[in-house]
Length: 110
Length: 113
Image (cartoon, rainbow over all chains, first blue to last red; front, side, top):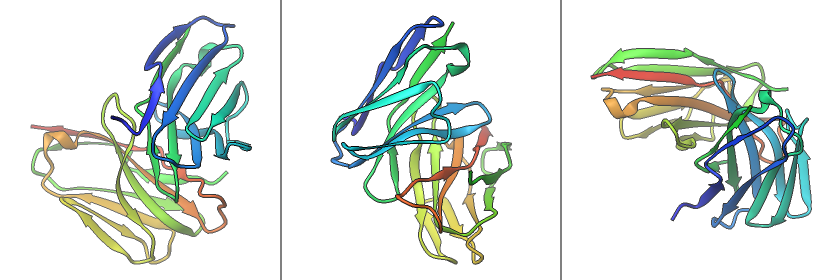
């Protein structure tokens, strides 16, 4: 079984809709992250959390929110989706510096 | 914010050739990591480097932590078709806190059989 899982794997939504992307991990790591990947731009950090009570904005947090429901769960929400949020979204976890990534969620906003 | 310059952006090579890619930073890094992303998957860690000058191998892959602590390179020897993917460097700078990583923009590698 995968250590870091993301649901859904693919999602198509319309402009203005609220959607949630979920991430679960069985690695027992305290630190969790959300990134988005766009062609030619690499991985950009949206939000990160170092424990259940700690949430921090990354470099591109506008238009996104997160919830750390438990050590093992970290969800990303788009309150009102817009087309330029079309991207590949990755969740990651870490204990030290090495981050372990989920398989990604491909999101298309029409 | 902190940026890493990763080059080249893309490479198209023949099977059997050696490959080299590198990352540079304007500030000193304490840790360098190299990841590979297969199509449709998340990045997977290949090699981690923690000391200036460190040279580490993982099969056909070799990576080095630059002496100046501002650069790192990854070499792949005798490339094979399954080496295809996007390679990312990542690092934690000396002023970085709480284990946040900065990622390069990736090198897209295509291997022609």
